[in-house]
Image (cartoon, rainbow, N blue to C red):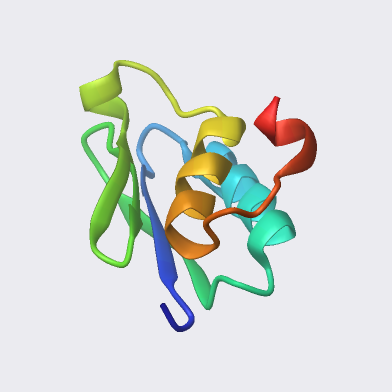
Amino acid sequence: MASPRLEIHYCSQCRFILRASWLAQELLFTFGETLGEVALVPGSGGVFQLWLEGEKLFDRREQGRFPESKELKQAVRDRVEPGRDLGHSER
């Protein structure tokens, strides 16, 4: 996969921007050389979803919670860099 695009859709009315930007930062620190782009996509209605190349990785409504950084790093790794050791995020 060449330069994958990760999108974080967040509810601007709920002020989820801080959580979205923190997760974007975490993912860029880990996959800065692998991801082509991390986009923050404002929305409404309580949305908080992560999409990688059109595949939904996480949906707050479906899961009933916000995602953990560790689980997102593992989900992204499994799709863009299988076999990569994530160090402390693996344990």
